[in-house]
Structure formats: structure tokens, C-alpha cells
Amino acid sequence: MHILITGGAGFIGSHVVRHLLNTYPSYTITNLDKLTYAGNLANLKDVDGSPNYRFVKGDITDAAFLAKLFAENRFDGVIHLAAESHVDRSIASPVEFVLANVLGTVNLLNAARVSWDGDFEGKRFYHVSTDEVYGTLGREGMFTETTPYDPHSPYSASKASSDHFVRAFSDTYGLPVVISNCSNNYGSCQFPEKLIPLFINNIRHGKPLPVYGKGENVRDWLWVVDHARAIDVIYHQGKSGETYNIGGHNEWTNIDLIKLLCGIMDRKLVREPGTSASLITYVTDRAGHDLRYAIDASKLQRDLGWVPSLTFEEGLEQTVDWYLSNQEWLDEVTSGAYQRYYEEMYAGR
Ligand code: NAD
Ligand code: DAU
Image 1 (spheres, protein in one colour):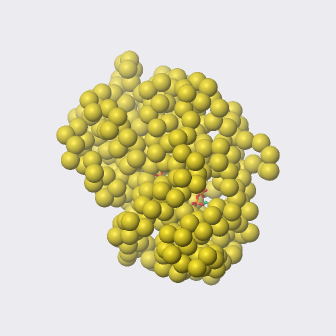
Image 2 (tube, protein in one colour):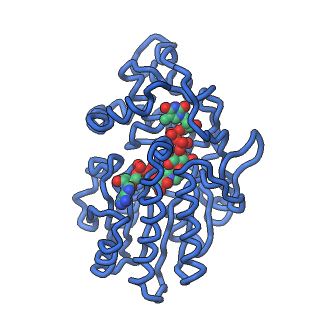
């Protein structure tokens, strides 16, 4: 079995690469990644010497490069994670999201279709998507696999568009596809522009914690290793043409999560209780900020037997421990270009 994983140097992708290498030693895994600011080979340093692992630097927006890669390899499957993934960046630079997320996905679908040339026996194209395609919920209800798409940010619109192309390639060419839509992930190796690692890093440096709006938005948090386990199960046992929602049944308002995180950080850094929370600063809300996400993952549990393995309190504690014992990782990824991004993104908020 030879699987092409795209975006394997990013946050979730690196956990998927590691999980598959450790679980299936007989598989060959090729990791294709452009190494944008979010891609980091240090995320995989524990597995990069594995004989059945190969890294290829490349860009999924480059169709000629993909055609050559597929011609030179006989991939049995693709697990597609490469994307621009940060909502705030999509508000600042929407076109980049269309290129990477829409054009990149279509190029990849087309490369797989041409290379497999109608012989789809044993093949699979797995597209990793997000719950944000469903839009926002009010105080009640949950997203199911049949919730109509209603994206609000350039990021979620680009992911929704890519999902539609994946289904179009299934309906038009018979490509054996499967899609999953997951809620917010947390864990090690997440770029510190996203809420949890950003706030851990800011608390470490005594910097303000910029809470958007009133902090009342709700997200449904899942440990990244549990997402990788779900991707494994869906890749191997999911039905072609189906969609599976993945989520932790773990809703938190941002402000409650931030207070929990602040308490853990005070304890770990041996600071007076309340020290980290004193950094909380309410700032201008994100434009088009979705109020609430909540995933109904009962189909995945019922059909494929997947359930999350950790409680949020355990996972968050482990996550904080990882960032505190990997401060060089944080310092490295937050130097240079990131400092400029941070100043521009939060200026005047
Ligand atoms: P990430 O930003 O950490 O990683 C994305 C990776 O894709 C990086 O390694 C980057 O270098 C690579 N990449 C970007 N553009 C590329 C291109 N043109 N060609 C090749 N590689 C490219 O993202 P993540 O949080 O790990 O998300 C991975 C996937 O999971 C995305 O598709 C995202 O939409 C989806 N997802 C993320 C979450 C979440 O909470 N983070 C939740 C649900 C779904
Ligand atoms: O729901 C899945 C999605 O989760 C993924 O598809 C995206 O790739 C991933 O980035 C994530 O999107 P969010 O926008 O929910 O994640 P983020 O960490 O950026 O924000 C989480 C919440 O915290 C959101 O309500 C905005 C808020 N927030 C975020 C930042 C960065 C703040 O209040 N302050 C901040 O500085």
C-alpha cells in the first residue's frame, strides 16, 4: 500500500503521517508539502528516518508537478490535508485560499483520475475537510452530514468549494472518494496563530490574550491524535462516496476555555492564581465570526466504531506540557515573518 499524504508537514498532517507509519509498518507513505509558514519538517523528526517514509517538497497548485509525481509513483490512495487553514489569514488574503484550497484540490483530483485511468479497484481519494462549511449554529442543534452548506469566511467558502469538487469527481468520473468534516483540533505542533497555542505562547511571554468580541463563540474541540485515528478508520473502512463528521462532543465558549487554560498555565508556571487571566483583553471581533460549531459524530461511531480517546481536560493538560517542553519549537516558528504577521493582524484591534 502506497499512500500519498498532502500537507503532512502541517499540524494535523504530521499526526496522520506518524499514526499511519506506526500503525502500518508495511505501508509506504509519501508526504507532499510545500512547506508554507505552517509546514515544518521538525514536526516529523521522530519518523523521518523510517525506511517506508519519503518527503517530497511541492505545490499542489502546480498541475505539471503533480502529473509527474503521479506518473512516477503508483499511489493506491491519497489523503489530502494540504490547505491554507487559518480563518484570519483568509480574511486578509482570500485569493491565496482559492488557489491552495480550490485549485490545489482540483489539480490533485485530476492527477489521481488521470493516473488511475478508470481502474479504481483498491483506490481511494480521501479529502479532509472542516465543519466550518456548514456555517454557524444558534444556541441549539448540531451539524450532521446532511446539514446544508453555508460557509461565511473565505477559508470556509474555499473548503466548501473543494468538497463540492470532490463530490463532482465522484459523480462525473466515478473517482472513489470519501470526505470527513471535523471540528476544531488541538494538540502538539499546531502553529501558534490558532487560539490554544497562541494563548499558551502569549501567557509564556506575559503578552495580552486577544479575545475576539465577548468570547461567547462556541467551538467543539477534538484532540488531534483522535482526528488522526478517525482518518485511519475512515480511510480503511469508510464507504466510497460518503461523508463522515468527526467531533469530540466537547463544546466550550472561548472565554470558558481560555479561563481553563489560564488556570493550567498558572499551575504549570508556578504563578499566582489569576496571573494568566489578568492578560485577557477583549478586542474587535473577527469579521463574519461564526457563533457556534457543534458536530454530531454519531454516524462515525455507529458505522465505524470510532470514539474519542481522551477527555478535554487530559488533552489540554498534555498539550500545555508539550508546548512548555518544546519552547525552542515555539521560538523558531514565531521568529521573523511571524512577528510581522502578528503585529499587522492585531494592530488597532
Ligand atoms: P496547517 O496549516 O497546520 O497545515 C497545512 C499544511 O499544508 C502545511 O504543512 C502547508 O505547508 C501545506 N500546504 C499549504 N498549501 C500547500 C500547497 N499549495 N501545496 C502543498 N502543501 C501546501 O493546517 P491543519 O490545521 O493541519 O489542517 C490540515 C487540514 O485539515 C486542512 O485541510 C484543514 O482545512 C483541515 N481541518 C483543520 C482543522 C483544525 O482544527 N486545524 C479542523 C478540521 C479540518
Ligand atoms: O472548526 C474547524 C476549524 O477550526 C478548522 O477548519 C480551521 O482550519 C481551524 O483554524 C479552526 O478555525 P477557528 O477559526 O475556529 O480557529 P481559531 O483557533 O482561529 O479560533 C478559535 C476561536 O477563538 C474562534 O472563535 C476565534 C477565537 N479567537 C481566535 C484567535 C486566533 C480569539 O478570540 N482570539 C484569537 O486571537
